[in-house]
Length: 303
Image (cartoon, rainbow, N blue to C red; front, side, top):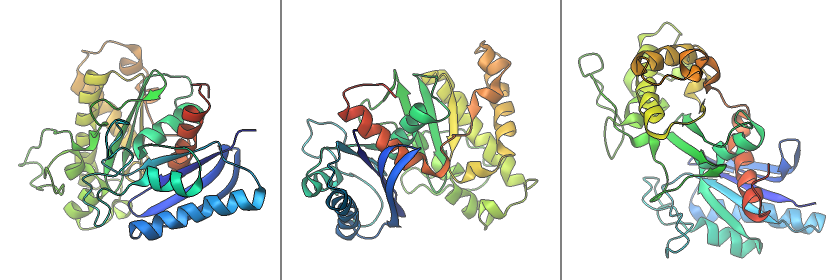
């Protein structure tokens, strides 16, 4: 039986797991993201100890990482985190370090692309080949799957940094993105909500006016993405989307913004099945990393 490793490399924590899917996780570990050498050594030790203890080799390890990342195999920086604002992590060579020290082939993609792929293997997009996953939490990331494979393009999607209309009379908040100020992430991430209101979103009651602003920004982004990449379904995950009352607000606003232009029943009649939460929950990232390894090293798109 083929066996794969997965790493969800987050800005605040790493989650590593070994298995073949959600019903077969044979080992896993979670630890804080500290400085690069300490963090990656912890991950390497986890995989090494498993292989020594079980006398099994892994067929591959997938990494779903925060970024930006260099995903062009022809680049000298392939597999590295690049211009991240996270202190000490710029140009950290994740892929090479893990591959060399575990003697196991490693593939890497963004955390959002990996989570999207996991949802296609085992979650809310198992019946689809072209779909979009947005995670709205501390930051905002987007993963696009096209014909069953994560899309990269020039580098990879950075949907959290698209520009959206900002009515400063309705919302005078400047935004928190260090690069763009009031981009999508700068206005609608969990960090932005806390900066705007002075408290964490999980503490805000459902009737707080900040949720109306939040739903509007998410809907503006989704309407643009519907028109630009035409996904078969949109999955919305992350800490902010744990607020269930957001989904009906966002769906209604997307329909209003599109104003009947995209005439398909998925949007005009069944939008509750078009804009949906992910099914893999908090394990979407690490399961997506396993799915990435499985897709890359099994030589097949089969799920």
